[in-house]
Image (spheres, rainbow, N blue to C red):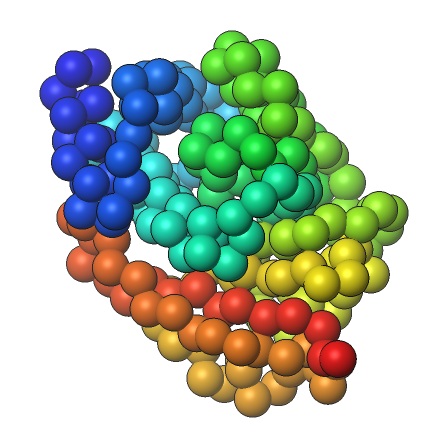
Length: 212
């Protein structure tokens, strides 16, 4: 456990994220819970701690500095197609000023997120079993990670984005083809390249808002 925390801290530092002792423990416990539940429920295809650290925890931590830049204060965030809670749980741990709702159409995955919220004492986190198209409400930020094509993500969640809100879509390589087919009401204002320690793959965030 100690070695994992040290690797996590080192990776986070490379990303420009300074983890408190509690945050490092919460993230490590989250990874351990994911592996434990994965023995019974198919939460993720990854089965070993090293892969969970790089492909899930550090990959999700990479969004924290850009998120701090784009939204520094309190707010609400909806993580669409969250699966095992990525990046929503990681955001909830690092940003207690954001109320994070993880959304997924698979009930067992949201039961897992609820378990994480309870065990790690994260009052700003909840898991919600629903389809995004049928959800009601307004959120300042709407995130996704490898959830769907950009046009489907934006059109499916457009009714949930608050005035002045922002979308952040975590993708692999620059999705030029998807960007060319966006709905007219969506304005992409930044495609941000990310480098994740220990992960030899392209990563980026597509930032967007509604057209004025």
